[in-house]
Length: 289
Image (tube, rainbow, N blue to C red; front, side):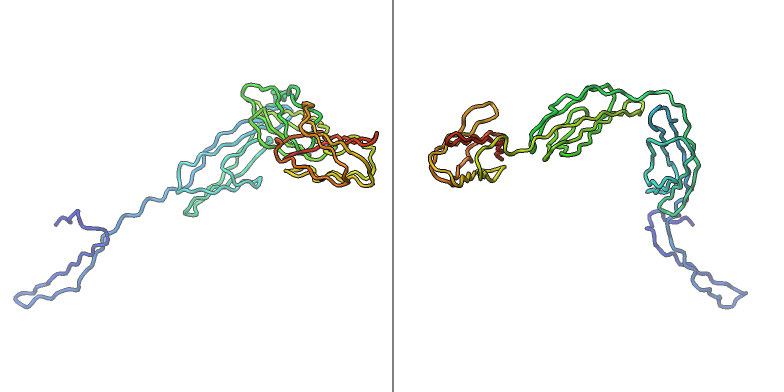
């Protein structure tokens, strides 16, 4: 008898027989029960294949190992002798590396892989950094290094913040000085790396010149209100504010020792504040947020 092919998995098929002796009543056996089920998938062991790239750079290590796992049951986990758990390994030194690959059924396989050495490629030589080498604190500036085809660039900043970087071009916000450091690393098509460094002079926002005792200007940076305190001064005081192009954007005269100026209408940026009184003067850098 052929089984109905439309029966669902889990169907129980019961069967029993009657045994006859001569003309006596039959002896009936117990039911035999068969349950339909899916045949288990074949368990395929883990097998590891790989490709390697020798170390070819003179100044740095650029050996690679890339694994290919075509059997076993994913997902896979990787345990390398160098402590890495990534599938592929890059920028390796020459030598022997071992890896154990385990699948989701806890099957595993191990391999010993050698990375060779043939150092023939020199490090790339970076061009000059383009951008200001003397900057004002709390301002951002653009920098660029000459681009070589196929190269990638990494920017490291000390004394500032990397706002964004697009390969060989970056924008950097510099903090309080007196100095910052800029380092750029180039990685070429061969995986060889070279770098260049540049010291940046950071000019702190504050007093440029001052012959007025007790002068206080706050807050700096300011986002709308600027207080000028002139203790022990008598007579008229002239207060002028210039933008970075030298254009006068505010002029105020006062006989008061304490003056508040509304500068909320000014664009964000760096300004020069000039204060004059009876032959004395002060010049300060002011940042408007």
